[in-house]
Figure 1 (cartoon, helix red, strand yellow):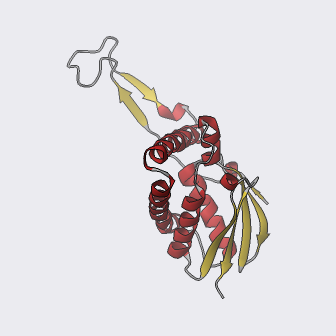
Figure 2 (figure 1 turned 90 degrees about the vertical axis):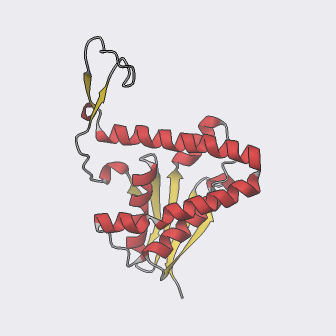
Figure 3 (figure 1 turned 60 degrees about the vertical axis):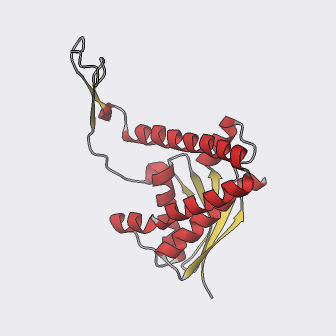
Length: 200
């Protein structure tokens, strides 16, 4: 089964942004008055994609600079702490949207929605194995790898962050399960692959 962002239903409140061509602090009356920009004229999915690409691009640029300044060991420890804290927020997401996480299948579905909602619609996932006790899934397209390629970052060092993120998500959502990252694109694999399975 392939996951596609268009299968996710969501609502976005109408939002309006006011701007003043003279600048809000200028004290001058703007020529032509205040213009109303109707942000909802841009489709919600397009706004989501633009925002997510900006976020992942900014993070990748900062991460690459941090690695160059502080070295890989420092960056990896930073990334593990950062992504561990992000993963721990998964419980809030599943509570808000009423997503079940009692089985490996339910847990994986909730995690995919959490990942796409927070990191953008570029993700493409493919189910390899799916049952109540074990689920194997692959990422075939990843926004982080895309940004690294666009910015010429040879090794984004995101494997460690991914592992910590997955472990934190499981701890937050269903401690009876365990997370294992078995393949990683930054390591040269064509896809990232992970397993959610019931602890024995």
